[in-house]
Each structure stands twice: as C-alpha cells, then as structure tokens.
Length: 247
Image (cartoon, helix red, strand yellow):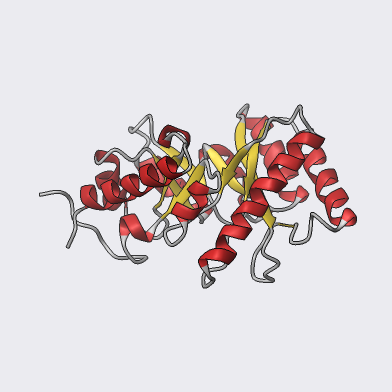
C-alpha cells in the first residue's frame, strides 16, 4: 500500500503534468485535500507531507477538527458542501474559504455572521452547468442561449457581491460522477467561459478563480483552467478508511 507522501506526490505530479500540457504554472493551482469523514490523524499525516488546504462538508465536523488542529496556524479550512442557514455561524467562524454559495439566502446569513465576527470570507459561487437535478447551485446549464438564465444569475451575483464581509473569488461546479471525458471537459470549459462572461459583465468583481475537479477528473479541470481542485480519495483513499503515516 502506498503511503501518504507517495499519494500526494502522485497527485502533485499529475497537476504539474496537466499545467505543462496547457502552458500554465502549477503554482496557480491550489490542491484542497478533501478530508471529510477522515480522522484527525489522517489530516496530520497529510499536513506533515506538505498539504495546507483541507476540505470539509459538515459544519460540526469542521468545527471539531479546526479546534483540535488550531495549533497549526497555516492550515486552511475549505467548506465545500451544501450549507444550511443554521450552520452559517460555524462556517463563518472556522472556514477560511467557502466553495458552495448556492443561493442568495445563505450568502446573506453568512454575511451577518461574518460582520459579528469581523471576518472576511472568500467564497465561490456554485453553479449547475451540467443540468443535473442532483446538483446544487445556480442554474446555468443553458446560459449561453438563455437570456433569462443569464439575467437571473447576474442579478444573484450582483446581490451577493454587495454583501459585507464576503469576497467572491470565482465560480465552482461539479461534473457528473459517471460521464465521458469529453462531457466532463465540456462542462469545465462551459464554467470557464461563464466566468469570463461574468467578469466582462462585472469587471469590478475580479472573480476569475475556478473551483472544479475532483479525484476522478482534476487533470481535465486543470487543463480547462481550474485554480482549485478538490481531491479526496486519491489522497486519503475511500471515505472513512485510514491512511498510514510514513514509516
């Protein structure tokens, strides 16, 4: 069984090769190790191997881990899951970045909590470019052809951008779990093009970062412009499975 350092090195090498293929710098890609459901011990091993960004999708689990690892001052927590309004206080307090602003209401709740804490939170707007009913986010599956869809999305982003203590860094989307490489690439390409359109419409936004790509498709995402990839099983193994520290 490969140890943690080997798994991380493989992922980093894949990112390097993907950026080389499209003449990008690997320094422009942030690797977020999706540590949800994995114990503290696994995170510590990954941290010792050089990982600094970790992704959680449950507010209570985020708080517990953040408190236990608060001595690691450069560790960055990314909340990557759907957030209920009652959990917004936890994310406002412990997350360094939130990848799934999928509705104006949650942005408003986060903004209120952040103002109380005097925190600024970088966020990604989650969009659904695949059209899958199981996916969250603002509907943008036909944004190039549907004026109403574009107008609705633009209005939502403008509203969120005006909220205090939120800093929109860019857009986030997920590709279908079981799809051809061609379809996955088209979805990531569509997100990138949507980002370019949005920044032309709102040049003051300067929200050009893209959170897209997971263990099965992050190389394609990097080739299509991802600045953040959320990789779990390729680093930690299957959910809930332990990893072994380097001998």
